[in-house]
Length: 618
Ligand SMILES: Cc1cc2nc3c(=O)[nH]c(=O)nc-3n(C[C@H](O)[C@H](O)[C@H](O)COP(=O)(O)OP(=O)(O)OC[C@H]3O[C@@H](n4cnc5c(N)ncnc54)[C@H](O)[C@@H]3O)c2cc1C
Ligand code: SF4
Ligand code: SF4
Image (cartoon, rainbow, N blue to C red; front, side, top):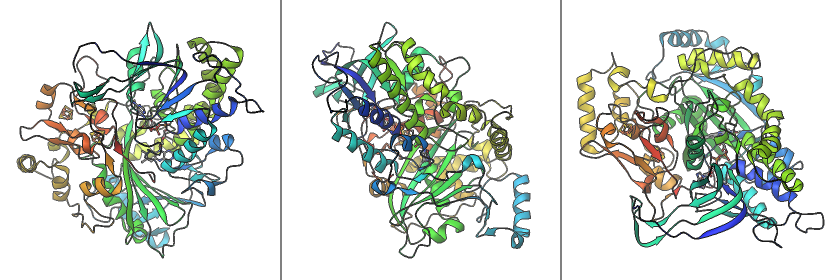
């Protein structure tokens, strides 16, 4: 990037928001209702445009406000408290939850990597299957643990929900939402966040100006609301600049991948049915199937950071998941309507940053709101935004500025008294058992859930790269190192990742593409989610130190990449294709090499960027 200073335009607003997900949806909805008096006149005057109502603007990176990848099944307590008369039929693809099941999926193909204890348990289940709620290689748990229940809740599409919320906001005339406008960074001046800078347009891949260069505008605001999700660059910039509270770390992650499938005409699945699964395609991979109205289903998996495999491919595993006999009887003859992948920040309150500072507040998943025990993030994110709105209106009414002290009292204080805090505390250490494997993990979750967080497994999360084995270590006893070397060379020559070849070598059946539901990863990018990348922007995935890549054994960035956007060059170094990136952020935390100057960061930088996957059904 050129160091020549550029002249930027500047605009003043009262409140600027980064990202339009459920968190900002909750913030803007609650705020907008309180910005008008009963007679429709503005309640607060703008400080930057005297005589005008409060100026509130939100910038969303993706080309549409219906961007998002999520389940979603949610208790929707926060959402319902904002919309007490909520009628789910008004939200496309939404349905009340009608039944829930938890299933342990056994391995029908014999290829997954199961411990001997798990194999013995599987053998027992098969032997006594006639006496158990067992069908199609799956055991239905006799009950859904209380903490997993979503009774009274909703099945939704996050894309449709965000659009529904956004259209009401825009119609209210109280706030503006600008999609297709990534925020490059926060403006930090003398320890205060003074607004944001938008991303430069008309730049080459390295960020150097070209003929149509347009420097990103500076948007100055009294309050900057950061709701840019789990891997948002502005949230991470604040984490780096202001540091994290003592002991807080971002080390637990998962990449969630899903398909939206149109079910066959004669499907027996009813809207509102919810299935949670574990055990297959690998024991560590959790899955879900949620049924929407009009014969649509969201089907997906989570590949966690504690899955000790260098072949963490979410797309290929998702294809095996949907073909598990228990699910396949419902899904075969279905049609892929959409597809997507996105990171989930699973550290919960372990990863909570400073929630407020001078001139800024953090909301949503990037603020540590996602609950890993209940598997719930949307309602939590929404509620953090709604609580901030209440606090902001209190400060506006009192005529107080958005200082750290005032925001701590008006926002953080509300959050500490809310169910987000009490339930987040219960969940805080619920996942720690997974550091030592699946069975310890399940036991630990049950322990935390049943004791309301009082008793937990003692293991501390470690960085994903610290637990990542090499291919040779992972396949020891199954594939000789010399054969692994040969497979790698052969894949490199074809420019392909190695996971397909290694998985098939270990017994995973080849995926028989049918052009309808089982399609290649490349076809999924084209037909499933429609990946877009407007020209004139710098690459947003950057390999910081090429020398680290040269010595990197696993090159997991290639294996994990949800869009096949990272490939190996013939010389053996990773290369990035912006056209294919779905902005899942998985490369950021999966990279196998920490930075010498900061071991909490990796050799991949994930910056603000445009485009990505576009599907309003996800
Ligand atoms: C596959 C999958 C399944 C899930 N299932 C469930 C479920 O069943 N139930 C549940 O409750 N939760 C579920 N979750 C989690 C849930 O989706 C998240 O917790 C929730 O979306 C978080 O909301 P948010 O508003 O904090 O962030 P996000 O939804 O991530 O929204 C952040 C927004 O900020 C934008 N943004 C990022 N950077 C910038 C920038 N620089 N400039 C401008 N905009 C930016 C992003 O494009 C995005 O739109 C699931 C997640 C995944 C991936
Ligand atoms: S980006 Fe990270 S994982 Fe990929 S080759 Fe470089 S160091 Fe290895
Ligand atoms: S390059 Fe893009 S699609 Fe690939 S892992 Fe990184 S963010 Fe996801």
